[in-house]
Image: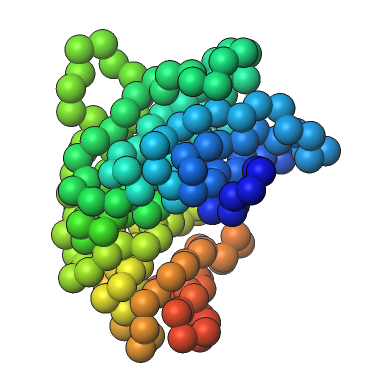
Length: 214
């Protein structure tokens, strides 16, 4: 990215390419050798987070413009223009979308926003379908900053935010299972342990790191 910050980045699940996003709405596709393959104008505002589908063929972008977009990687890399079109635009958040996470096995996307909502989406393109939002989870009392699927227990979803809490949701019942509330400031990031499905860590605006057992 030239003359702008790198706001988000993610490796493909197979590790053969990487995507980065910037505050000016651009996404860059990189080879693993760090050679830039394509730059794509994805949003009119900051790209807050990028998440890649389980097959590495598509990716989602969450933006401060209030939308999420689904992109086909092959289509945009073959397109010579910088203004390629998304496969799908997911609208419904009432404010800036801070985060998104594509389910590691299924066509299911989670997002979080300044509107306090965690939304679940079906990102598949379907002719004539207007509403891709599957559910709204209003567990948080303030801005949602991060969402994260459990890579080994697919029905568990974590979310965290500016209400100083972390919420664990079971999407089979669409119920909040537990609130983790040990932090004293905004909870800015969360991540599951890659091998132990009942462990996760969280990062806080005060510099603290939480280590949690579900």
